Structures are given as structure tokens and as C-alpha cells.
Image 1 (cartoon, rainbow, N blue to C red):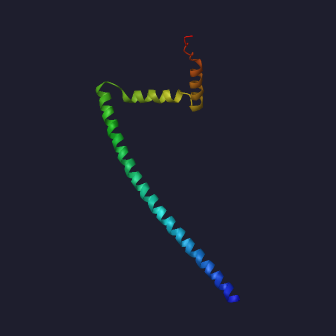
Image 2: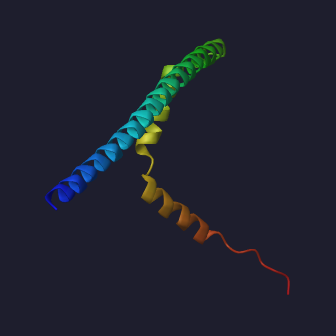
Image 3: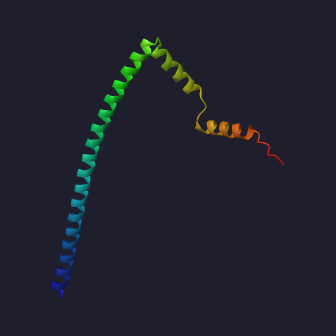
Length: 108
């Protein structure tokens, strides 16, 4: 009877080892997939950054040609954004605006 109990325990440990090994392989595959996704995303981000840099250069050249000071314009926008109400206050302001709009009169 002692050998039967030991055999069952060994089989249980072996089964647990196989399950753990299977899970480890699944995790390894997931890590490889995540790594590939991150690498692809990095490539796409770099390509997008290059496009944005090129578009920025074109826009700055057009602005210069039109006599627009880009730095001054960006500074003004940053100041306006800093002075703008935050999201919660903005929603409240929008709600107030819709409340103050009179309803259209309907003919009777």
C-alpha cells in the first residue's frame, strides 16, 4: 500500500510539472509575440515621427513665406491652453451654454 501511495504522489508531481512546463511555453510564446509587437510599434512610431518632422518643416517654411512667426504663434496657443478651463469646468460651461439657448418658438 505504501508503494501505491508513493506512485500516486509521484504521478501527481509529474502531472503538475507537465502543466507548469506547458504554461511556461505558453508564456514564452506570448512574450515573443509582445516583443515583436513592441518592435513593430517602435518602427511605426519612428516612421510617424519622421513624417511629422517633415510636415513641421514644410509648415514652418510656408509660415515663414507668409510672414507668420511660428514661435510667437505657438507661445500664444500655449498661453491660451494654460488659461483654458479644465475638463470638468469646460463641461459645466458647455452645460450652461446649452441651458441659456432659448427654445425655438413653434407655431400654434
